[in-house]
Image (cartoon, rainbow, N blue to C red; front, side, top):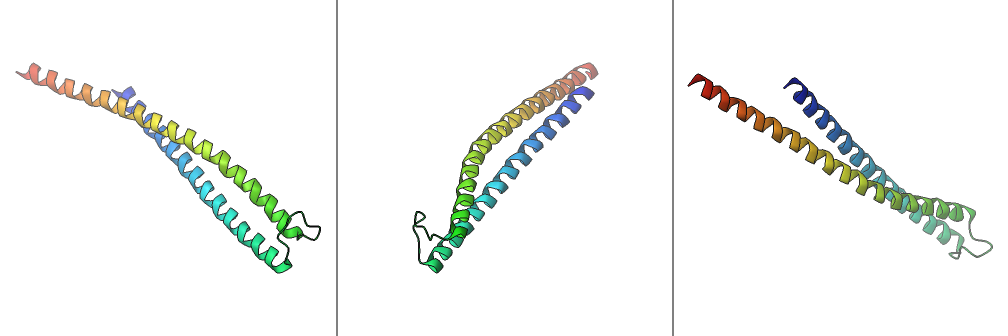
Length: 122
């Protein structure tokens, strides 16, 4: 039984690690989304200030061009994180299922032991 207790603790630890990973990715997604929105506002403000909204124009503001590149990089990172979060959630669900299976076996075994002890006393 000692080894099964250790196994249950291990499975719980693994599940917590998976949950932590999902939360970490969600926080990164939220931060990147916030940064993208902020860059959108800054680009719009810079274009309004300069009076030029066409990035192909020769006098398009350098800051707006750099901010647009940064925003585009963040958007591609967001797309990549979206794939990672799906994988992380699948791993979390798998870890949850493994833990439930081990706990169910433990419960079944403990119930079986109680039944045997009751028969031995009778």
